[in-house]
Length: 412
Image (cartoon, rainbow, N blue to C red; front, side, top):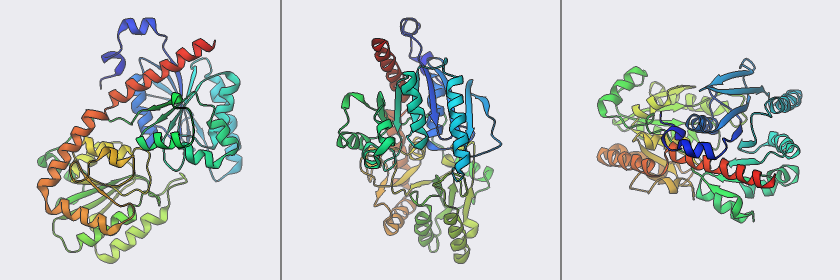
């Protein structure tokens, strides 16, 4: 993997400008998976020689190591059971201890998302005069309009950021609507490793389907994400099932993502309903559940069609990865998010969020017209190559860290 410091940061530049020390805070980190955590890891891997990183993350796994090393970077984990008040209090104490134990290793606090635990972290940053960078990850959750509506201490702490990073043009619109200063906003989309996520040909797709033990006939449809109400895997199943019952070219429906988890968004009833419905319709053998994989790229390359049926997103990593893999994509039309990625009818198809009939029609178009499927996949890959590579993203974050460092130097 090419890294930004080797490929693009000159020796003279590194000698003149100080190397930033950054504490990256995220809700999950490898080997646990979340969109924010995986994007955070890719950023760290790109910049680890240009930036001194330390990772601080919460975990839902009580057996996870408290401290370990990933990609040459130290990772500190704090176990928290979100349903247990005592666990939250103990977790807050351990977060505080982890921050102060590592206080000499960083000068910037980078929060990937903003939640209740961020109140504690921003208060610690204020007392220690560490500038805070907040990456806004999810519309309807930590975007400025939603945060302003919640108000109180949470919003007051949110306002203390030195810089806000939005991942989509919709985030910028909401930032402006909240009345926050544009001088403290940067638009930096998520990025994809093009060496890991790359297209396959028909022979490789068939070989991967055999290796992954997937049904080997028909067009394979893929979903990647949590089993949550807002990700809508059940609506994808309904649309796929309508088509699969009467169409010989419809292949397996593959779900990759946790059906059960301590994470608050995951609803185990969704997967159970899908299993029951598939059994009732005689489609059980054609529906595949993959709870976790460290090789998600193999599933993209084995698929013919990728579907993102979500009701809301920040900038979906799964959609970026599928497009980079040259897979024809269908996504919910989310203003300033998916319509920034996909040109409808050209590099993919957009459908109304939650509309099962539209989703079925879009699936039928791609199944019935393989030439369109292949062309959309090719143009999707071109989109990612032009605008959404991890190298482009990493370079922009390095500029953010240096801007914060310069501002910190002026303040000192």
